[in-house]
Image 1 (spheres, rainbow, N blue to C red):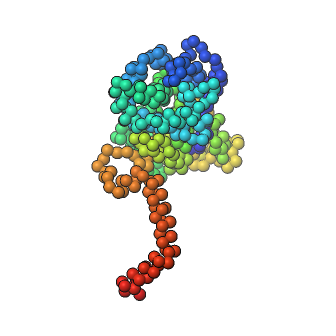
Image 2 (image 1 turned 90 degrees about the horizontal axis):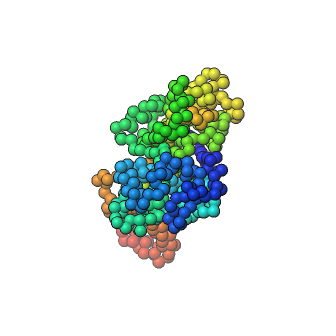
Image 3 (image 1 turned 180 degrees about the vertical axis):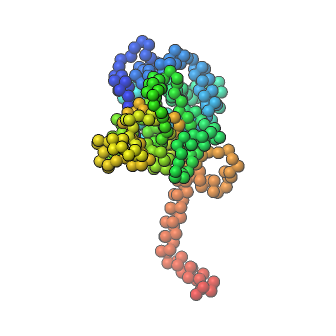
Length: 386
């Protein structure tokens, strides 16, 4: 709901300057070795024994399997990463940051963006992974996709089947009708995840409920991996905290359409809403309470919390369970006519705009031409309009 400017980790910031250790190295394309950041260690500790020393064939096999198993989920995760990479706020949004593009503590965002631009649509790269010289042709792409889709696999994202959408949306009964999302994805944490264990421990003596949270598209890469962090929230009209709503229509305006990735199966322009599970704890302030201690924060400048709103002051009480995706131009295998002038104009929007502008300028110029005006008047007379 409120725009999350950044999600950071103290472990990550404290470890950026750490020196390389013998067991803290990973293979990087174009370099012999590179120091692992604390963040890389944080998210790969469970799989380092299998991944860091794997040969290229094994890495390609794992990536190909993932892309074939759930292509839309992989596409969404990659799109969120690309959105975070392309924003001017990348330093705060792009966390975790791929360590292979950090050199001497400097984040080489331009090199990363060039690498992203060279990535073909995921169905194409999946097919190319079956070619014998795949790594020679797509080495940098494979390394980057592998890091985003496999190294950062806790939590992981998986597609929800269409028939399951209604049961998910019913977790928060709506009073005001609103457009349903085009796609829903589940965010799943490993059972041995420290954050999930802490959540389960806190929820033992409390009930839970669901609510929506909206944010800009470029924020969701870090939101998925770090969770919603109260201390990084921008909005504070009714007090400092993470804002949620029991109405999807209330959260939607806080999730404007953003540009993800041009080669996406989901379409390049999407918006994302988080459906979260919250522990019903006194630290959660709610607008539907008549108790002043429950419906107002001490630092509020706008008075009591509005109805259908929740403000969470302890991020440990929140877990993201689903991502609701609204698409603008979802790619489809339907029988839609993809030929002809209309389809060509849709695929070449910029060129169409330029051509239209040229025609407009030409028409304005011709209307000022006396010779053209003479023939125009002659045509009007001959046609009997005067």
